[in-house]
Image (tube, rainbow, N blue to C red):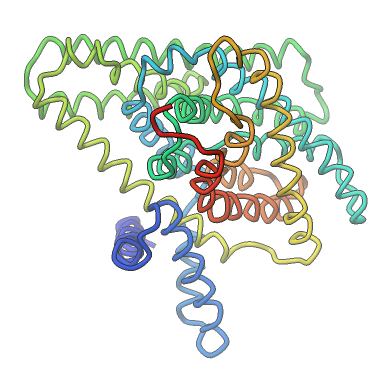
Length: 416
């Protein structure tokens, strides 16, 4: 199928579903698009009992799209840069230590907790799955998704201090989570030549530290170029080039492109850099351009997530395992956040019920599905994909729709 036709079809669906949501449902874009796409996909399934023409066309469309490659290699860098560009750098700086702890220690603890619990649950369900593959599931489901989180928090009226922690953690922990996943994936794949601790540390250091360093370099070069001119159209193009070239460089150098784009976005979006490098007109156009990119790619992404239902392997045991995984993932996240919150609670004056709100507000999204799709068949890909999909749908639809009510119940003010 021609790529132009695929893109046109996805944007058409995103536009129609977005219109329905804005006109009738009035839900946050992420939730609304996800819900409408799932309902639409179920309707296609129902229609297929009478005429399967549309179903076959949709399956063909989805099979033509390499979801993992599209999201991880192309869309993610744009989405993370856009999210970081509009994040309050000064607040992030104040909260940097708990955010760092959430994004590293939190992801690692959650990975092993989820992996261990899922391993024993699958044993009870009569499925003999190696522990290393359960750890793979733990690593892909543990990072919260900034793409899902950012859109929902805007409407949930989460207190600013807490919102900074959730957004900051989400921006960084997906990059760390991808590196953890790749490390465990390497161990699981290396049956003949075992991976040593030195190999793990080297990979982790190269991906994480290298990605951060590359992001700083890209951000600095972009700042210097923008500062030397006053032409809003050219400066918008410079930011676009920074993301595209930065992603290519990160991929070629085997560095973490997500972390590089987060760092570059934070640096360019910093108030001091904005004041020094951008005129008021340039700042307006840069912000609006990346806001539009964010909205468009978000819409396409969540339409794709909903349509992925068409390629799932539906088995009762897989569905049951997925439903059981929901509380296990939530419990593991709650526990993984406990220590960092205890350590920094007094010093940084955390708002009440921080752990509970961060647990419920830490949504999973396209990144988890993309990583699950990258599993090989001998890693129980079909089962873990179904489990991941169930957790993601619950996360976006149930947690996303109720996080605002949870905030209100804890009697928190938006001014806190």
